[in-house]
Image (cartoon, rainbow, N blue to C red; front, top):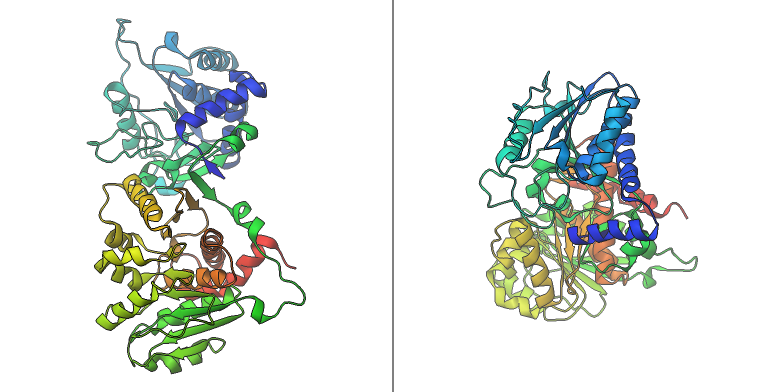
Length: 524
């Protein structure tokens, strides 16, 4: 699914209005109805709702939502932050509709006025019974933020900043419409001194998704986001060139390969994993187990002599290539029989390990580079030029920093990631919530599967095994990245359904890989 920048979202609105065709007010009604449907399903009618509306089209959404809720017997109040004489045309229509639906203006409070009106500003309101954010919607007074939409280009100041800070201090449940007011869509909020941005518990955002949804620094403002389809022109979205994409099951399903009845292990490739060391053989066990579960015909693990018994006992299906060193990876094996190599989990940073890695990355074989192998590259940045084109690096944020340098914020880090992918013709899988995958052509793919229960030692080793196994089966690097990351997260989601977040361990991801495959394409 494409992620559109804010200027293209505006163009999508305009294109839809012109070519569907549909009037602006009716497109607003469609968006508001999508929000109302979610609210109606999640908030009891016994709860009081306060809509804080601006004077633009986001405020118009809020007023339409308020009308729909009132028609379903919710107690709804509207706080209009601005002068009723300065409403956008569609916002004015919904302002009048709300007044008509409630038989008068008594349920609208005007919070602000224009600078030239000469009227006094209404004091900021009291919200009634507060609620802690952990209780979810439906407790106490629920606040709906419809102040500003997605088009902000400068920080909110003055009266509106005071209002936003007042909302944030309330401790009531806050639900933002499209984006939390004050949040930038295509650039960072960091660097601002105490930015005035609504801290929403939930954000009901309109499809297509926005880039801001996928960065950790925005999480305190966005909360849980729900993507609502409001019927923007698929034709426009299809023909619009973008650099950002959201990875879903629909993304990866088309290149999943079904197996021929007469297939044998020789047609599914032979994966080599160079992994493990003293005290870190668990990394080898997890990577090898995950690699086997991802479908290659054969898996061989290159391990130091001391790890042989551990690996043969824990993963008997894997073959072994035994290093001459008893403790660490020290020299290259013969590579002719392998179709892909994964290197890094648990290998350590010893000097002869570094030398062996330098030789390996010059061999040109399809390769996945993780963990200590990335740390070695971080200590020897000139070796990055030896990386084989199309190789895959799978760092976590700290490992990425070691090869790319420090960044000022998440947007800047994403820029560095794209630049590194382009410079070295490699694919970078930056692990985390919404794992970001960058390609040499500048495109970035944000994964949507996975959960916080996967924040446990060994999860990255599992991912290395999965992607290596896919590469061995001749999936191209981008397919291996997208499918591997999505499967990894989906296995985590399936594990979380049974175990919850706290009790999950990396081995649970391996155990749930089979069901993750079945979830994508169903049983044969």
